[in-house]
Image (tube, rainbow, N blue to C red; front, side, top):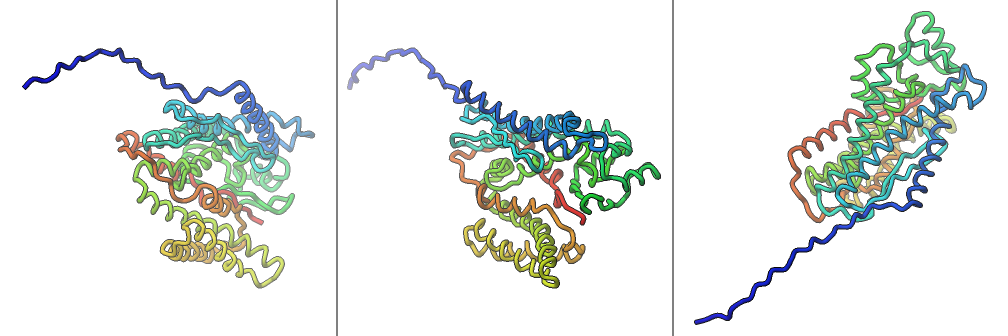
Length: 399
């Protein structure tokens, strides 16, 4: 039996060009640059309030160099973080915007910076690389800022540059050291205290003249470094589509990440309760003396609302985590007599942000790939950074 002869032809291979997706126009670059400039001015203005040498200046103009230094440090961290994401996305040819810097002339002068991924990331390796590049870059820059600040610390007499610190200055002149306990400031009777972290406390132990946390925010390198590390930790929260959510999802997959994210969210709401209950207690007692403990019921109701939204009315998650979160917060406050210490409500706002804007679950990725050993090690190190740089009480007040 014979078969017809088959004719084979050689066709030259012409590789298809993969067009880069990230070529911003001149107008786009100009727009983002202008937004950065406005944010720089905003952070400089607010930075004067934090680090400006008020004891020796008659006008704000005399303090702008201190505010500008703080702006350079803080925006240097934000730029490193966002461009870490940006260049990782460019490397993987994922369409992405340039960073948007967000000015706001209160607080620290900015709400941060964001980039927008304009297409779906289809595999876990790209998801991991883009998710972790920002925290790595931001962590390195913040750590460098903090270490430089520790290595170049002036003596305690540096606090004489700031008005309204008469009691502290008198103590330093007498003893050469800061007071162990923060005295109430004379201007409004309130002392602002930044929360310590494991990493900050560890590094501070190697240096002399480290200011207490109730004065640290007058030191631009320490304050900017602390903020950078804390914001890195916030982004590494392993929930939803935050950087930490991308990383942990890539490490353990959809189902396990869903469980971990729920437990982490319960922990965050517990911290929110430790802030919110004293805040409500103080204000209720001011208007209705003797009814301060209604604050527990009010927070319990708000917590239930967060839980129902976050867990999509799934009672199997809502009830046990609601009980644990509320019970732990109340027990902590009773054991520490913390009902009279007002917090900043950062964790309350973070809980709201997570359930309404981030969502707890990470959406499934189309292609799940095994990460390389190096990526896995880096991923677990980033989770350790989250623990080392987070503060249970980031900002609180003594009144």
